[in-house]
Image (tube, rainbow, N blue to C red; front, top):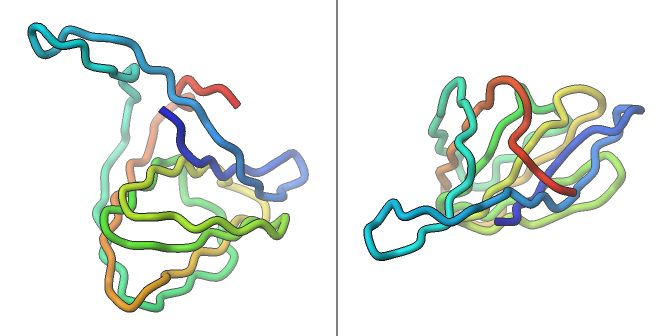
Length: 128
């Protein structure tokens, strides 16, 4: 499974990359092979509803976390000047917990709900 990643380099600049979350087959459902990742230990999960038009200036992530947009399209800007639109049902791994951080801006004219899953310990097994 691939997802967008936001990280800080050694100078504190934030960047995007693509991240591969390793998946392997499991017989969780008898007679069907289901692709599953290795479980990651989470500290907490939080649901947030943002109003339309909300914008958050430069900020580092409060923790290494997965952000899942349920029904909101938003834009992330990294300090290197790149911007990416994030569509509903997208998963983003945010780990720029220091440095310049990133900006976020709500797109569209309706409120949206997101899920933040704060991770404990090491990052999930990822490539890239």
